[in-house]
Image 1 (cartoon, rainbow, N blue to C red):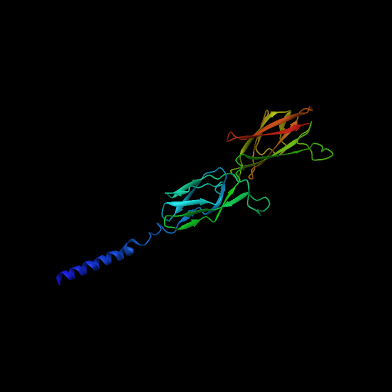
Image 2: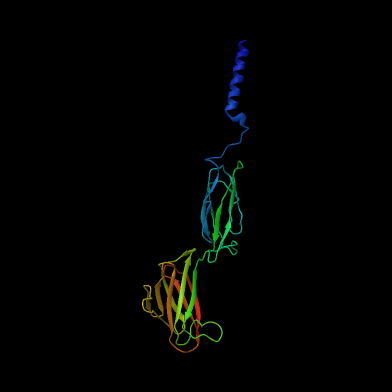
Length: 249
């Protein structure tokens, strides 16, 4: 009688232990720290710039994939909670973008953790990165030919060189730029009240962009011979530059 009672106590204790462990280990472990998320889930990235993403929640290791693997490559497996991506510059953009919109290409990153939970981004896009985005245009007072527009420069004429500076997708406003004549019969001048805080020293003119990243400088042809001219524009804070050229009539 005593032995049967002791045996019954052991059976009950064993059943209670199994019950507290979820049926003897048959259940899968839940996520750590809540449902998994990829952060940030929305935003604009620029080509050539490194970004860090965070996986919050879920249970490692994680499997990752990108809808645009050539544009935004991601690691296939991640054991931690952080990964870096460096998108390429997109050559094809989303269809239906408004006129003058920033050229972007949308993509998604998806993740599956070790217990089968999934997560994904909802509004990521890659914008073209104008790393040395110096747009340069010319407007002169030269007479126009019978067909076509006026030339960029001419003998005895004056030209307005317009710079539009965009760096890493951002307007490069309130920055100082240097324009230098490398070749050609040009001299710089400033019309009244248009120097934007600039100065002229020899064949170099410095000026500041406005809040939208725009600046205008003015060369004048000193002689009447026909030759090609070259100028260089350079941000005073770096060593990168863009060389431009225009013909002198």
